[in-house]
Image (cartoon, rainbow, N blue to C red; front, side):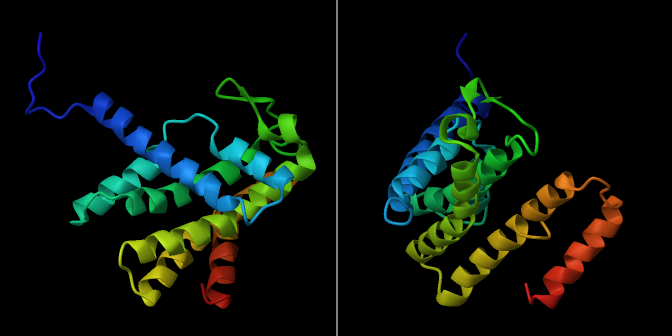
Length: 195
């Protein structure tokens, strides 16, 4: 039976978009070469290239299109910056001090291949690397300096103390505060830092 071409086909769409995202991730790894030592580059790219659905960057691209944007490599580069942040979080979540996972999606986790020290440092380096990638991609998309800074600010807001980093800190506490208390403290910290 031939599928009706007027009906949106999710699976082929995701496969096609994932291929574009994987190309952008490869470009991101190439752009890390001058920024990281060989040891950290290997660990960072291992974490970034761990297989996944790539839904975050795909949703970023779809949102860009929904707002009237056209599809071009820079859109995928911007979307890949989200995947760098996601990779950092998974690399750190897998550490023995967190979830102590030796496999992720059937692949050895970064710390089992490169060691804990390199994984911590490489994962941490992915946050500013994602910021640089997002700033550059936003410029390639024609954004002015103010808009580029806004993109980086939002990315770091989500990744920082009030977001993913803060969440991981709470995960490490023996007696974590109630979620609402922790959220209120993180939001106050963000406001006082001008973020």
